[in-house]
Length: 236
Ligand code: ATP
Image (cartoon, rainbow, N blue to C red; front, top):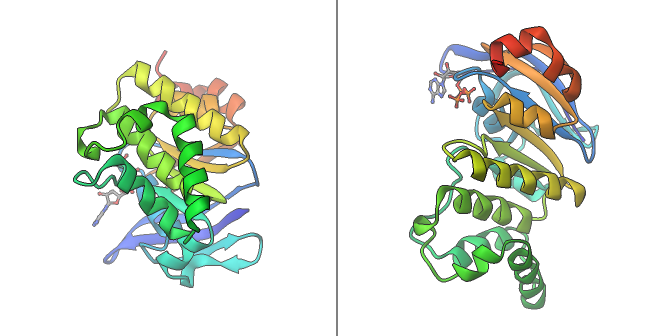
């Protein structure tokens, strides 16, 4: 579904991603794990068309190169980014934030009603809080809202940037359970995380990003047992 080939990206003259190649197959969860500053966010921003690459290709559905496509057209293709920090509009209500997801696809009124109902069945807490300002939600609830809004945009692939950031361990468990369920529903997921253990536990395959280079790749189960991954990212 998504194949990144020899991608290099930088800010001004300074390259931060060097010759990156990886792929995500339909219905997979693929994770890119790496420390602070490894280049994970830069990579997702480039796939979403917000940053431009200096070299390489991003192929979607085997043939279409996204590197020259504008970010709003990338969204229309179903490549939906849940950014680091969640991108919630804190002064709008929960319901209004969700509507933004629907409007990307310009659905008719009945369809919007059905989609909202599905969302509220999946996340009853968002129904309870639907009229509250989104900024009043807890961190975990805001992450649920951000992911729900992305799901309302009918994603072919979801790009999740550090969904566990800043959340208490028990809430991280809930967020990862949500990621599992979304995947079971057939959504393809590219997940970038500093929390390598959680990410590799949920993923089918993983890549390790260090200083803008992919240094290791494989089945997530094998990466969890890899000594270099254990010593660099998993502690005990
Ligand atoms: P984190 O987990 O801390 O978000 P990351 O793996 O997502 O880290 P990036 O945010 O992609 O890493 O940053 C990669 C490199 O690019 C870092 O060296 C960072 O300082 C640099 N960088 C990021 N944003 C900019 C920017 N707007 N201008 C210049 N350099 C930047």
